[in-house]
Length: 310
Image (cartoon, rainbow, N blue to C red; front, side, top):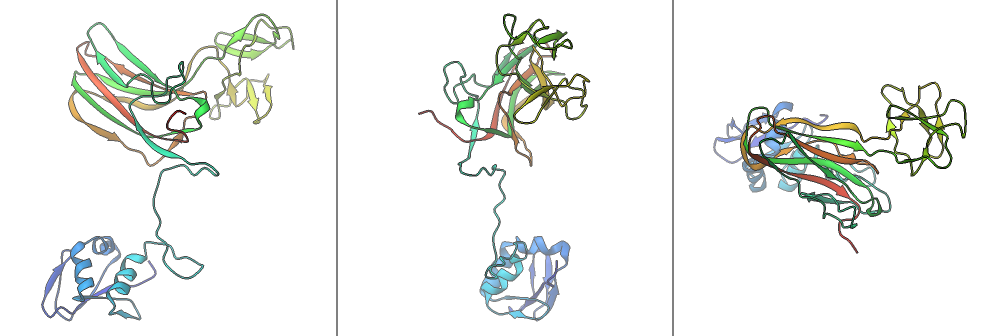
Protein backbone atom coordinates (compact mmCIF):
# COMPACT_ATOMS: atom_id res chain seq x y z
CA UNK A 1 0.00 0.00 0.00
CA UNK A 2 1.67 3.20 -1.15
CA UNK A 3 -0.60 5.72 0.63
CA UNK A 4 -0.64 6.39 4.38
CA UNK A 5 -4.21 6.38 5.71
CA UNK A 6 -5.28 8.45 8.70
CA UNK A 7 -8.62 9.34 10.28
CA UNK A 8 -9.09 12.53 12.33
CA UNK A 9 -11.96 12.89 14.80
CA UNK A 10 -13.43 16.41 14.41
CA UNK A 11 -16.88 15.54 15.80
CA UNK A 12 -16.33 17.45 19.06
CA UNK A 13 -16.57 14.33 21.25
CA UNK A 14 -14.68 11.12 21.74
CA UNK A 15 -16.09 8.24 19.69
CA UNK A 16 -15.61 4.65 18.63
CA UNK A 17 -15.43 3.57 14.99
CA UNK A 18 -14.47 0.20 13.55
CA UNK A 19 -13.70 -1.04 17.05
CA UNK A 20 -11.26 1.81 17.81
CA UNK A 21 -11.75 4.66 20.26
CA UNK A 22 -10.63 7.92 18.68
CA UNK A 23 -10.37 10.93 21.00
CA UNK A 24 -11.78 14.20 19.73
CA UNK A 25 -9.09 16.02 17.75
CA UNK A 26 -6.90 12.92 17.57
CA UNK A 27 -5.44 11.62 14.33
CA UNK A 28 -5.60 7.81 14.14
CA UNK A 29 -3.21 5.95 11.85
CA UNK A 30 -4.94 3.05 10.08
CA UNK A 31 -2.64 0.04 9.88
CA UNK A 32 -2.59 -2.20 6.84
CA UNK A 33 -4.36 -4.92 8.79
CA UNK A 34 -7.20 -2.57 9.78
CA UNK A 35 -7.73 -1.01 6.36
CA UNK A 36 -10.42 -3.41 5.14
CA UNK A 37 -12.29 -3.06 8.45
CA UNK A 38 -12.47 0.73 8.12
CA UNK A 39 -13.38 0.57 4.44
CA UNK A 40 -16.33 -1.72 5.10
CA UNK A 41 -17.65 -0.07 8.27
CA UNK A 42 -20.98 1.67 7.67
CA UNK A 43 -20.58 3.94 10.72
CA UNK A 44 -17.20 5.11 9.44
CA UNK A 45 -18.80 5.89 6.09
CA UNK A 46 -21.60 7.84 7.76
CA UNK A 47 -19.18 9.78 9.96
CA UNK A 48 -17.02 10.74 6.98
CA UNK A 49 -20.12 11.79 5.03
CA UNK A 50 -21.32 13.95 7.95
CA UNK A 51 -17.91 15.54 8.42
CA UNK A 52 -17.32 14.05 11.89
CA UNK A 53 -14.29 12.13 10.61
CA UNK A 54 -11.76 13.58 8.19
CA UNK A 55 -9.64 11.27 6.03
CA UNK A 56 -6.00 12.28 5.70
CA UNK A 57 -3.12 11.15 3.56
CA UNK A 58 0.58 11.80 4.09
CA UNK A 59 0.26 15.20 2.42
CA UNK A 60 -3.41 16.17 2.38
CA UNK A 61 -6.47 16.52 4.60
CA UNK A 62 -9.68 15.72 2.72
CA UNK A 63 -12.27 18.06 4.23
CA UNK A 64 -14.58 17.24 1.32
CA UNK A 65 -16.37 14.04 2.45
CA UNK A 66 -16.63 12.58 -1.05
CA UNK A 67 -12.95 13.14 -1.78
CA UNK A 68 -12.01 11.68 1.59
CA UNK A 69 -14.11 8.58 1.17
CA UNK A 70 -12.88 8.06 -2.38
CA UNK A 71 -9.30 8.26 -1.11
CA UNK A 72 -9.98 5.74 1.66
CA UNK A 73 -11.72 3.12 -0.51
CA UNK A 74 -10.21 4.00 -3.87
CA UNK A 75 -6.87 2.32 -3.30
CA UNK A 76 -8.52 -1.06 -3.85
CA UNK A 77 -9.24 -0.04 -7.45
CA UNK A 78 -6.58 0.34 -10.15
CA UNK A 79 -6.19 3.81 -11.60
CA UNK A 80 -7.04 4.50 -15.21
CA UNK A 81 -3.98 5.69 -17.11
CA UNK A 82 -6.25 7.64 -19.48
CA UNK A 83 -7.57 10.38 -17.21
CA UNK A 84 -6.40 9.51 -13.69
CA UNK A 85 -9.84 8.53 -12.44
CA UNK A 86 -10.50 5.43 -10.41
CA UNK A 87 -11.67 2.34 -12.25
CA UNK A 88 -13.94 -0.04 -10.33
CA UNK A 89 -13.32 -3.71 -11.09
CA UNK A 90 -16.20 -6.19 -11.01
CA UNK A 91 -15.06 -9.70 -10.14
CA UNK A 92 -16.76 -12.34 -12.27
CA UNK A 93 -16.18 -16.00 -13.07
CA UNK A 94 -17.98 -15.57 -16.41
CA UNK A 95 -15.79 -16.69 -19.32
CA UNK A 96 -14.71 -13.92 -21.66
CA UNK A 97 -15.57 -14.96 -25.22
CA UNK A 98 -15.05 -12.52 -28.07
CA UNK A 99 -18.02 -11.86 -30.36
CA UNK A 100 -20.39 -13.92 -28.20
CA UNK A 101 -22.59 -13.52 -25.14
CA UNK A 102 -22.19 -15.92 -22.21
CA UNK A 103 -24.94 -16.38 -19.62
CA UNK A 104 -25.03 -17.73 -16.06
CA UNK A 105 -27.52 -20.57 -15.59
CA UNK A 106 -28.53 -22.47 -12.46
CA UNK A 107 -29.88 -25.83 -13.53
CA UNK A 108 -31.05 -29.13 -12.12
CA UNK A 109 -30.78 -30.92 -15.47
CA UNK A 110 -28.68 -31.13 -18.59
CA UNK A 111 -30.00 -31.11 -22.16
CA UNK A 112 -32.24 -33.73 -23.77
CA UNK A 113 -29.81 -35.01 -26.39
CA UNK A 114 -32.24 -37.39 -28.13
CA UNK A 115 -34.97 -34.79 -28.67
CA UNK A 116 -32.48 -31.88 -28.88
CA UNK A 117 -34.10 -29.76 -26.16
CA UNK A 118 -32.07 -27.39 -24.00
CA UNK A 119 -32.33 -28.03 -20.26
CA UNK A 120 -34.83 -30.89 -20.60
CA UNK A 121 -32.61 -33.77 -19.50
CA UNK A 122 -33.21 -35.95 -16.44
CA UNK A 123 -33.69 -34.07 -13.18
CA UNK A 124 -30.69 -34.50 -10.90
CA UNK A 125 -32.71 -36.22 -8.20
CA UNK A 126 -31.65 -39.51 -6.64
CA UNK A 127 -33.95 -41.87 -4.76
CA UNK A 128 -31.91 -44.62 -3.18
CA UNK A 129 -33.48 -47.92 -2.03
CA UNK A 130 -32.12 -51.10 -0.42
CA UNK A 131 -30.56 -53.50 -2.89
CA UNK A 132 -29.39 -50.76 -5.27
CA UNK A 133 -25.71 -49.96 -4.72
CA UNK A 134 -25.40 -46.94 -7.02
CA UNK A 135 -27.56 -44.63 -9.08
CA UNK A 136 -25.96 -42.50 -11.78
CA UNK A 137 -27.21 -39.76 -14.07
CA UNK A 138 -25.56 -38.15 -17.06
CA UNK A 139 -25.50 -34.41 -17.72
CA UNK A 140 -25.12 -33.80 -21.44
CA UNK A 141 -25.18 -30.53 -23.36
CA UNK A 142 -26.04 -30.09 -27.02
CA UNK A 143 -22.98 -29.28 -29.11
CA UNK A 144 -25.21 -27.24 -31.45
CA UNK A 145 -25.96 -24.78 -28.63
CA UNK A 146 -22.46 -23.49 -28.06
CA UNK A 147 -19.89 -23.89 -25.35
CA UNK A 148 -20.59 -24.76 -21.69
CA UNK A 149 -18.53 -24.04 -18.56
CA UNK A 150 -19.04 -25.62 -15.10
CA UNK A 151 -18.70 -23.35 -12.08
CA UNK A 152 -20.27 -24.57 -8.82
CA UNK A 153 -22.49 -27.31 -7.44
CA UNK A 154 -25.28 -27.32 -4.83
CA UNK A 155 -26.33 -30.40 -2.87
CA UNK A 156 -29.01 -31.42 -0.39
CA UNK A 157 -29.92 -34.87 0.93
CA UNK A 158 -32.30 -36.64 3.31
CA UNK A 159 -31.85 -39.61 5.70
CA UNK A 160 -28.41 -40.63 4.43
CA UNK A 161 -26.63 -43.39 6.28
CA UNK A 162 -23.02 -44.15 7.16
CA UNK A 163 -20.86 -44.25 4.02
CA UNK A 164 -23.50 -42.81 1.70
CA UNK A 165 -21.91 -40.26 -0.63
CA UNK A 166 -22.01 -38.64 -4.05
CA UNK A 167 -19.36 -38.18 -6.74
CA UNK A 168 -19.20 -36.52 -10.14
CA UNK A 169 -16.86 -37.21 -13.04
CA UNK A 170 -16.10 -35.63 -16.39
CA UNK A 171 -16.53 -38.52 -18.83
CA UNK A 172 -15.40 -39.18 -22.40
CA UNK A 173 -17.86 -41.31 -24.38
CA UNK A 174 -16.59 -44.34 -26.33
CA UNK A 175 -15.31 -43.92 -29.87
CA UNK A 176 -17.50 -45.75 -32.37
CA UNK A 177 -15.82 -48.35 -34.60
CA UNK A 178 -16.77 -50.39 -37.66
CA UNK A 179 -15.25 -53.46 -39.34
CA UNK A 180 -16.05 -52.84 -43.01
CA UNK A 181 -13.79 -50.17 -44.54
CA UNK A 182 -10.56 -48.29 -43.76
CA UNK A 183 -9.38 -51.05 -41.44
CA UNK A 184 -6.31 -49.23 -40.18
CA UNK A 185 -6.87 -49.83 -36.47
CA UNK A 186 -6.44 -52.57 -33.89
CA UNK A 187 -7.86 -53.06 -30.40
CA UNK A 188 -5.49 -53.56 -27.48
CA UNK A 189 -8.06 -54.45 -24.81
CA UNK A 190 -9.98 -51.14 -24.87
CA UNK A 191 -7.26 -48.98 -26.42
CA UNK A 192 -7.70 -48.13 -30.10
CA UNK A 193 -4.31 -48.06 -31.84
CA UNK A 194 -3.00 -47.71 -35.35
CA UNK A 195 -1.99 -51.05 -36.85
CA UNK A 196 1.81 -51.48 -36.61
CA UNK A 197 1.77 -53.09 -40.09
CA UNK A 198 0.31 -49.98 -41.68
CA UNK A 199 -2.87 -48.86 -43.44
CA UNK A 200 -5.42 -51.54 -44.27
CA UNK A 201 -3.82 -54.18 -42.04
CA UNK A 202 -6.02 -53.67 -39.00
CA UNK A 203 -9.34 -55.10 -37.83
CA UNK A 204 -11.31 -51.88 -37.28
CA UNK A 205 -11.88 -48.41 -38.65
CA UNK A 206 -13.39 -45.25 -37.14
CA UNK A 207 -17.18 -45.04 -37.49
CA UNK A 208 -17.35 -41.46 -36.18
CA UNK A 209 -15.09 -38.67 -35.05
CA UNK A 210 -12.69 -40.19 -32.48
CA UNK A 211 -12.97 -39.00 -28.87
CA UNK A 212 -9.56 -37.93 -27.58
CA UNK A 213 -8.57 -38.76 -24.01
CA UNK A 214 -5.82 -36.39 -22.82
CA UNK A 215 -2.63 -37.93 -21.45
CA UNK A 216 -0.71 -34.72 -20.85
CA UNK A 217 0.42 -35.87 -17.40
CA UNK A 218 1.71 -39.35 -18.24
CA UNK A 219 2.33 -38.83 -21.98
CA UNK A 220 1.71 -42.51 -22.64
CA UNK A 221 -0.86 -42.05 -25.40
CA UNK A 222 -1.05 -43.73 -28.78
CA UNK A 223 -2.01 -40.60 -30.71
CA UNK A 224 -1.00 -36.95 -31.16
CA UNK A 225 -3.27 -34.14 -32.34
CA UNK A 226 -2.25 -30.61 -33.34
CA UNK A 227 -5.73 -29.19 -33.76
CA UNK A 228 -5.96 -30.36 -37.38
CA UNK A 229 -4.11 -33.61 -37.88
CA UNK A 230 -4.53 -36.83 -35.87
CA UNK A 231 -1.24 -38.74 -35.98
CA UNK A 232 -0.45 -42.23 -34.65
CA UNK A 233 2.28 -42.32 -32.03
CA UNK A 234 3.78 -45.77 -32.47
CA UNK A 235 6.17 -45.31 -29.54
CA UNK A 236 3.28 -44.92 -27.12
CA UNK A 237 4.48 -41.51 -25.90
CA UNK A 238 1.61 -39.47 -27.34
CA UNK A 239 -0.64 -36.91 -25.70
CA UNK A 240 -3.90 -38.79 -26.32
CA UNK A 241 -5.52 -42.20 -26.09
CA UNK A 242 -8.66 -43.31 -27.91
CA UNK A 243 -10.89 -45.99 -26.34
CA UNK A 244 -13.97 -47.97 -27.29
CA UNK A 245 -15.43 -47.64 -23.77
CA UNK A 246 -16.48 -44.59 -21.76
CA UNK A 247 -13.60 -43.21 -19.71
CA UNK A 248 -13.47 -41.03 -16.62
CA UNK A 249 -11.30 -37.99 -17.29
CA UNK A 250 -11.60 -35.98 -14.11
CA UNK A 251 -13.29 -36.62 -10.77
CA UNK A 252 -14.99 -33.26 -10.33
CA UNK A 253 -16.66 -34.16 -7.00
CA UNK A 254 -15.15 -36.95 -4.90
CA UNK A 255 -17.30 -38.90 -2.42
CA UNK A 256 -19.06 -36.02 -0.66
CA UNK A 257 -20.64 -37.58 2.47
CA UNK A 258 -24.46 -37.57 2.62
CA UNK A 259 -24.96 -38.87 6.15
CA UNK A 260 -28.02 -37.46 7.90
CA UNK A 261 -30.10 -34.66 6.41
CA UNK A 262 -29.15 -31.37 4.78
CA UNK A 263 -32.59 -29.96 4.03
CA UNK A 264 -31.22 -26.80 2.39
CA UNK A 265 -28.84 -26.74 -0.56
CA UNK A 266 -25.25 -26.11 0.44
CA UNK A 267 -22.68 -24.79 -2.00
CA UNK A 268 -19.66 -26.64 -3.30
CA UNK A 269 -17.98 -23.40 -4.28
CA UNK A 270 -15.05 -22.77 -6.56
CA UNK A 271 -12.91 -19.85 -7.67
CA UNK A 272 -12.53 -21.50 -11.06
CA UNK A 273 -14.76 -22.03 -14.06
CA UNK A 274 -13.90 -25.05 -16.21
CA UNK A 275 -15.07 -25.61 -19.77
CA UNK A 276 -16.85 -28.91 -20.40
CA UNK A 277 -15.60 -29.53 -23.92
CA UNK A 278 -17.59 -31.56 -26.42
CA UNK A 279 -18.17 -34.45 -26.56
CA UNK A 280 -17.38 -34.85 -22.85
CA UNK A 281 -20.21 -34.92 -20.31
CA UNK A 282 -20.74 -35.02 -16.54
CA UNK A 283 -21.84 -38.13 -14.68
CA UNK A 284 -23.22 -37.93 -11.12
CA UNK A 285 -23.11 -41.09 -9.00
CA UNK A 286 -24.83 -41.69 -5.65
CA UNK A 287 -23.33 -44.53 -3.59
CA UNK A 288 -25.77 -46.34 -1.31
CA UNK A 289 -23.20 -47.74 1.10
CA UNK A 290 -25.76 -47.99 3.93
CA UNK A 291 -28.11 -50.07 1.71
CA UNK A 292 -31.05 -48.01 2.95
CA UNK A 293 -33.72 -45.59 1.72
CA UNK A 294 -32.53 -42.02 1.28
CA UNK A 295 -32.55 -39.25 -1.32
CA UNK A 296 -30.39 -36.47 -2.74
CA UNK A 297 -30.74 -33.68 -5.28
CA UNK A 298 -28.18 -31.52 -7.05
CA UNK A 299 -28.08 -28.14 -8.77
CA UNK A 300 -25.16 -26.87 -10.80
CA UNK A 301 -24.19 -23.36 -11.81
CA UNK A 302 -22.97 -23.20 -15.38
CA UNK A 303 -22.18 -20.62 -18.04
CA UNK A 304 -23.36 -21.21 -21.58
CA UNK A 305 -23.74 -19.36 -24.85
CA UNK A 306 -27.34 -20.42 -25.51
CA UNK A 307 -29.97 -20.94 -22.82
CA UNK A 308 -33.25 -21.54 -24.70
CA UNK A 309 -34.34 -23.29 -27.88
CA UNK A 310 -35.54 -21.53 -31.02
